[in-house]
Length: 381
Ligand code: COA
Image 1 (cartoon, rainbow, N blue to C red):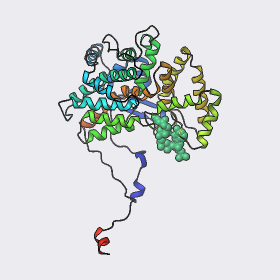
Image 2 (image 1 turned 180 degrees about the vertical axis):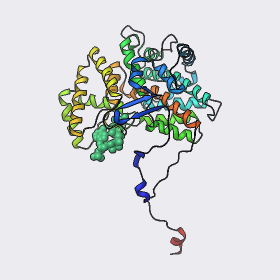
Image 3 (image 1 turned 90 degrees about the vertical axis):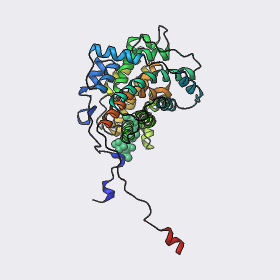
Image 4 (image 1 turned 90 degrees about the horizontal axis):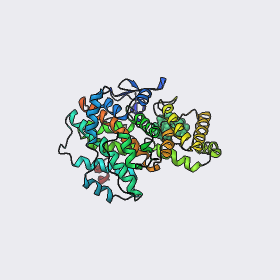
C-alpha cells in the first residue's frame, strides 16, 4: 500500500486507543458513560453525580457525593490575583480566551509542575470544576458592568452557577426548578463524548507527560472552534440572522446551494442522528413553551426538516442547546464556555486514563512537498 493510500484525513475512522470512559455506537444511536445510557443519566442524576461517575467509574453513594460536594463547594472562590488578571483582559475578547487564560493561570499556582498521580489529577479536576463556573459568571457580569456575585455554598453546582450569573430575584433561572433541570441536562449531555477533538487534544498533551492544566488549556483551544464546541454559538447567530421562521427554509436552501456549512448539523461519528439530541430537544421545547420561544421552535423544526429532506444530515447536540441557552438568558458568546464547564469532567477522566496507560501519541505523515534537493549542488552550479 502506498503512503498516500494510508492517509486518513482528519483521522476519520481511525481507532487510536482503548477507553473505558464512554462508548459511542452510531449504528444504534447510543452513548453510554461508564456503561450507563446518557439519557438515563440526564433524567435521573445530578451533574455532580455524573462528574463522580466519570472520574471514579461508579455512581456515588449518598455519603460519597455529600463528601465530594463539601470538597467542591470549598473550592469555588477565586483568588484575588485571578480576579485582577481577568479584569485586565479586554471585554472585547472571546470569553473562551478568558477561560483558557484562567486555566493557564491556575496551572502556574500548582507547585507540582508535572502531574504524576491519579489523585493529583482528580484534585485538579475538582479544583477546575469549582473555579471555572465562578470565573465564567464573573466574566459575564463584568462585561455588563454588573457587580460580582460571590459563590454560595448552600447551592448545588447548577443552582450556584445560575445564581452567580443571574442573581437571586424571583424570576432568576437559579430559583426555577425547570430551568435548573434543563441546564443540568445540557451539562450532563455535554460532559463526555469519547475521542472528540478537544478530548483527543487533551490526551495528546498528556501523552507527552505534560501536566493536566496544559492539557485542559489546549483542550479549551480545540473546543472553541466552530466545527466543535463553538457550533452552539453559531447556531444561535444563524437563528438570530434568520429571525423569522417563514424565512428559515429559504435560508437553509440558499446556504446549501452556496455549499456553506450549517452549524449544528452533522457529526463525524453519528451519521443517522446524534444520541443526545432527543433529550436536549425536549428540554429546549419545554423552555420555549414557558418563555415565549415558539418562534425558535418553529425555526428549529423547519431548519431540521429542510436539511433532512435535502441532505439527510441530522442535527447534533449544539442545535437544540444553542436556542435553549438563549432562552435561559445567556449571552451568545458564552455558550461555548458553558460547554467547557461540563466537558472539563470528561477531559479529566481521559487525562487520568491516558496517564495510567500511556504511549506517546505521534502519528506519521505522508510527505507531499518538493523532492529532496541539495544546497551544495545549488552552490556548485
Ligand atoms: N452543513 C452543510 N453541509 C454539511 C454539514 C453541515 N453542517 N455537515 C456535513 N456536510 C456535508 C459536507 O460538506 C460533505 O459534503 P461533500 O461530500 O459535498 O464534501 C458531506 O456533508 C459529508 O460530510 P462529512 O465528511 O461526513 O462530515 P465530517 O465528518 O468531515 O464533518 C462536522 C463533521 C461536524 C465537522 C461537519 O458536519 C460540520 O462542519 N458541521 C457543522 C459544525 C457543527 O455543528 N459542529 C458540531 C459538531 S458536534
